[in-house]
Length: 167
Image (tube, rainbow, N blue to C red; front, side, top):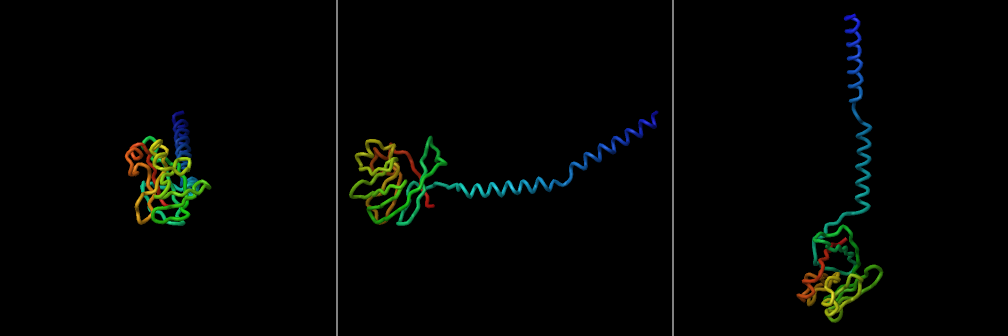
């Protein structure tokens, strides 16, 4: 009986070992699938680009497309919008934003509100948190800045930061 049991034990051990090692073979299928998933992720990343917004002041010229992102709770949001620069000269810039054309100038309204309206200094002082951007005054080149850089302390202290980058 001991010999019979020993034979069955050896046979069962050999069978279990063979099954165990056969399931640990090269997982080419898994590696191929992982590669496909990585390629898909790369394609998805390209479809929705990720941008770094580092500047709250940017020089613009006609034809530029500028992306902007607001800061909420101390963090730059992942949501961003864009506008195009129709024309730019010292003291004046014309922007096209959400299908609306606005003109910011040293001689008129130099602030842009969050709802894309041209604001004069009095408007911006009344609600500085809604200043999206403004034209930096008295410059030989055309520079767009966020409200925190405005020359007026009431506006700069109450504005919400906006960060820019060229597309």
